[in-house]
Image (cartoon, one colour):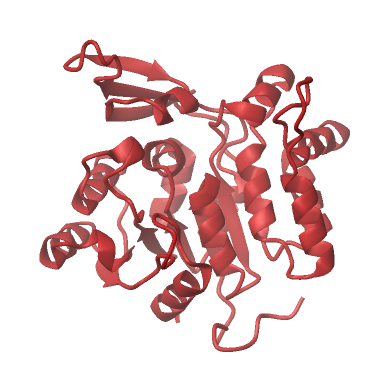
Length: 322
């Protein structure tokens, strides 16, 4: 497939690895496929809710949902690609056992059973979609999120308790004090480690901070690869830094959390929308502590709070990288 042409095209091919999960990673991938075909998504595998959680429990497989979303975000801009993207994203209604399942989740698990190989199965789905890139899991086995959360029990707001499971952590009304994974040293996805080592740029975020972004920094082999890679490293901050899992956070608190979870990992660029930078000097200093330059650029959709605009994000990433 030829490289993209037009005002967003890079002057040279760039190999880019994007780490995350859910809608945040999908937003990054939608922007990146406008810039280059050499994209690898490294996707969190800790989801335990909804369709993914049911399939994970029943078949002892990686949760397929975030992997499916990443594949769909990379699909080819053709009638064929769009049709298969819609097929993968279709969810069953009704009141039976299929209710709530995404067809793509069932397809991915079926292909895994047929091939007996997770990565080959994802590559096959990618070819079906005409994906402009590759999708890989961040570990070769499913993970469990374990968090210490203050105020998880509304009746005991000052108590800190251990909460297990991505869904329970993400939906907790409390404040996350620390985050971990089980197993603590999971089997790595060697293809993902190789992609990080061969990348020109590695990007983290946006996404649910403690359940989609930070888990990548808790996989020892993956962190070692991120530290050792010659690639430039970029952190794309969320548009709503103070909501959800990080309620009452400032952008600076995200950077402090990043440093606490991966003290050896340095950054080159922190990308932030103007809406999350009330104090440019403070955030610039926090970025500098991680070795990074702060780049402030409009990347938010104009009429959709908390949503990245693919074209604006692509333009910002193009300017940073090129």
